[in-house]
Image (cartoon, rainbow, N blue to C red; front, side):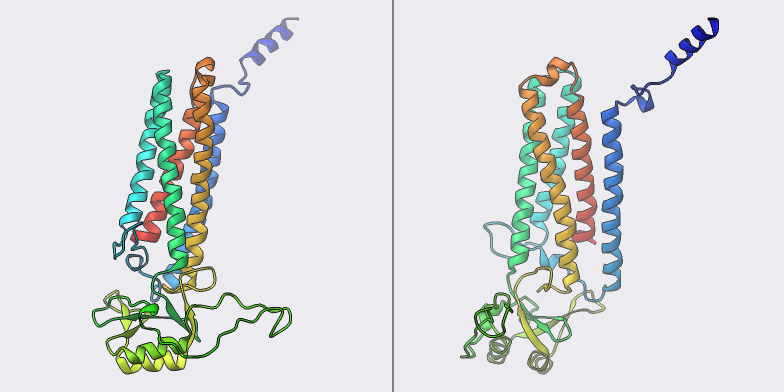
Length: 325
């Protein structure tokens, strides 16, 4: 009898899954587990990017020459819009901190206001990233891919990029893409580029101030510009395909591996941001409805805040790897 009572008392003191580990609730602990596992995933992706870039360091695209666009403005503005996107995302993390702090003090109206600002910041970032993707895919100048897979760009005497559309000369040849109903059976070609290599070559001949620039980076950290004679020879003998913009197969800015990593890693992060915006919207309406006020705790706001801070921190590393280094 005494033994039974003693055992019962001991079992009552055994931890049953409550708030003992690190004084965190079950939900918060699970959020931390998810963040750690996701951090390892992003680390693997960025490590693969780093190794690939190191392997092709002599031909990797220069970020200042790729991300030069600003919506509604024409010109060369390296990294400005990307910096704006980063600033917006970091500020949304600040407003999330303020929302969590307001929740700790049970100030419902402030939680609503700061979460609203966080959602707006997330939407601006996702929209900006979608615009950046569209610009990257569409391209601006165009280039020519060689038979060996290298990229040849056109520049003027001062080293500024020259768009193919500004110099291409009509070769007066009919261009018909193979479709299943004509040409080879069951074979279709992708959409034909706006110009042929012959038209670009004719334009190069007609513009003596235009030269060819390769994707190879010289000792000064700049892409190699060929002489006039070598430019004509390279385009005539090695030109294979006109490239416009970037996709998973070709990339007018340089090696296609850069575009592969860019689409995959920034897309994966963009999916995280979009998911965070959706979750924030759900929590936002729950706050408006007074769900957490009735519970007497705004811990859900704190848990989604952990996720949002993680997304912001990951972007700092993505921004550094892709745009700064």
